[in-house]
Amino acid sequence: METALNAITIVLSVVLVGMVLLQVKGTGGGIFGQAYSTNFRTRRGFEQTLFRGTIALTVIFVLLALVSARFIDRG
Image 1 (cartoon, rainbow, N blue to C red):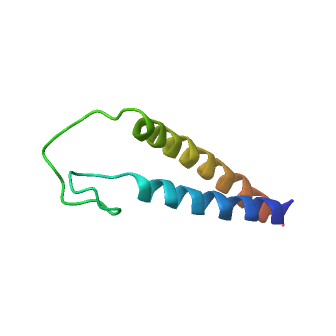
Image 2 (image 1 turned 90 degrees about the vertical axis):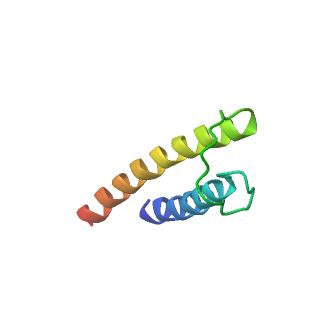
Image 3 (image 1 turned 45 degrees about the vertical axis):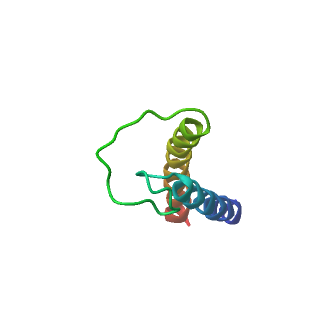
């Protein structure tokens, strides 16, 4: 059980990092974004889905980390 939780946590963290890097900030469009822009726009389509998915994956990751830490404490 502990090994499965660790494996899922690792896979989830790699996917989460990828999702964060896919989100483009600013007008430059680079993979790591550009300087903070004063232009504001709404997210639409895939960008909004990616944003909401990142939030959901972050919540799942934190909960999984807490459950995993609980199992390690009981040893």
